[in-house]
Image (cartoon, rainbow, N blue to C red; front, top):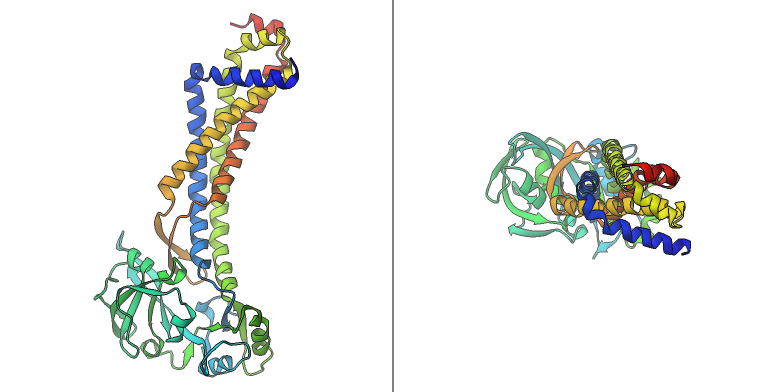
Length: 395
């Protein structure tokens, strides 16, 4: 028989004899499944958070902050700055009205529904243009707030995560009391973690005067961004930082993504070592138990390389089965699970759903494959190198 025929025959033989080694094989499979499930579960946090931060961004929407500011929390734009922004080139208009929403950003305390502990929740003061600039925002319960009144609408994510946010509830923010009149959705975006109020009513409640944190701008086209940015950054009347909305929220998600990835590498690296040792033990046991069989096959003319590859393929098969079980288990347990975590850029809570993506499933398969290859490599060398005379004497 040639090399490929020998290898195929040995692989088929190994697979047929797996039921006789079911205990050790199952231990390896479920050990790897546990590692993969933890890996996918942890990384689905960063995937879900990043999705919330970027799902609604549009390339034809720009965000303007004060120069040097890296978030809305550290930005201040005066009314005069907003007037200059409104007159800049490259802005889309509705009739003769530039589509610019000057917005306030305030952090308020609300109790978490699950524990009752206080949490930082973003309260955004908006103008009517905010709804034109964010067409994905839809009222799904109650009604739209009335301008000029102490009314708020609550994002669906904030409503699920925090108490006192049902329609009809009363909240006390700043010097005023506010009535929740509606719940809105924004296609799963970060706006769903916020509470919205009329900026003209919110400003005096927090003694903000004629100031804002940010200006959201609808561009005439995605290609107008550079024209708009140049118009403002070269204007001596203002000191501002201009970026695309997508760029701003993508940058905010990087801190949590980096933290979660670091934790995943540490935790799953340690667990992965355990899974590798489990696979090594399983395959060493299999090789020892079948030493006479392997020696007999070699005596019949099967090459050492074919034996080695068959052992690695068996370990790889067990690893892939474990990886598939772990990935599917993680998908069933975590995908869509809703939680809230800190946005480190604004120190406020962001409601999001864990997201087990195809990219994570592929990464899990690669990780399981790596465990299988390492776990089978050294036992395979032992199986191929053990002298036939020695193996035949083993009991």
